[in-house]
Length: 170
Length: 180
Ligand SMILES: [Zn+2]
Ligand SMILES: [Zn+2]
Image (cartoon, rainbow over all chains, first blue to last red; front, top):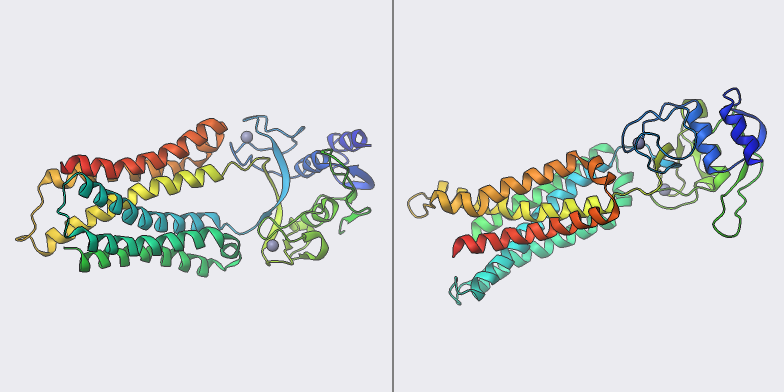
């Protein structure tokens, strides 16, 4: 039955299924690509008329699936980078500070306050980063404007962090 | 004409292919119903209540009954290969953030009170500016060359993700080394 379906697809004339046919995922992929231009998600090769389930150009295995129409990933990554940079600034700042104390590069009296000054924003940024990862599914459902507002909020964190450090660290 | 699924998905025991009887064109709606697809965002079963957001002839966009996102048919990699790329981006952003914020802090202090705080060029370039530029460049390159990263095999991708975190850790170590 599956062979019949494949032959119907590859015959070209039967890209639509006028008669019910048994279709597996491979057949569905080939049927879809028989009359659709679709670039390989990895190498960009036009997959129209594909036979088999691998890209002829890059040889990676392909599948037909439901995908989200909205282009959300760029905004999500932008927010992620802003939060990760804030976390890194404070976390690595803390590491460097403790390293300096251990190596005797800092006096033992004044570093404890700096641990709190860097530790607070590190905790906030870490929490925001975890929430950004956890709520990715909600992020996807936001409108474009709201999505970029979230990104702006993510990038305001390093700005606030900078002002915080400027005020408290001397 | 709206494609129809004549028989619901027949899940075979074991790893065999899922088959269904379909007629008409392959659209998001027919595909979801034939194969019992779930929403890639919220995992809700789209086939049960997915509403057609637009006609099947223009690509057949479906709206997920769970989260409301619009879904369409797409050809994707069987293995998405995105997780380790995201991990690498986070790893490099940690180090880039440290250098950029530290550099901004030093320059701001210098500009606000040049009499009290006057860092030497070596104190700016060596510990922060050079590694910061390096980290930001690698991060930018990684974001722009996502496709290149995803084409690597699992071992290479794992190594690159681990290396991005190690590189970030080294920025703090490098700062300490410069301070000595
Ligand atoms: Zn390809
Ligand atoms: Zn959903």
